[in-house]
Amino acid sequence: MLPENVGRLVTPAKKLEDNIRLSELVIEVLQQNEEHHAEAFAWWSDLMVEHAETFLCLYSADMDAALEVQPPDSWDSFPLFQLLNDFLRMDYNLCNGKFHKHLQDLYAPLVVRYVDLMESSIAQSIHRGFERESWEPVK
Image (cartoon, rainbow, N blue to C red; front, side, top):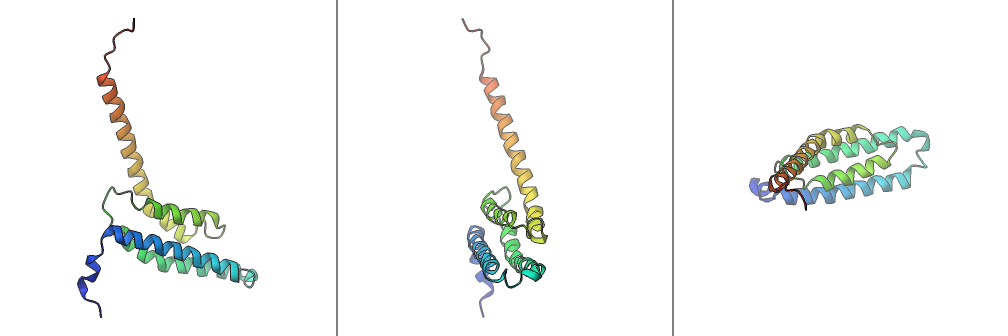
């Protein structure tokens, strides 16, 4: 049995790194399932989709745990979103499915916050630029 403090030794960055690697493996398994079993289950494609969604649901517990410990206003988890979102968008059956919607719901506040901060930063830069302007006519 592992000591209780082992989980506390893992940094948020390490958890995220491990989760990105895990997501790569999850995607690989789902792609292999599609390659090897899609033909056999052609008549029962809904079972393949259900299996994939269940598999992603199991993975989401680890993903959610890794994201919960990330510092606020950290954009380090965007590569995870991009990796998963790109995969899900390309799969007709998983695009806008349960897991995809869960992923979108998790990242929507981060994206909105990121856009707000970028907008604020750009506005501040423009304002500072105008303050430094002398507004003297050019001769």
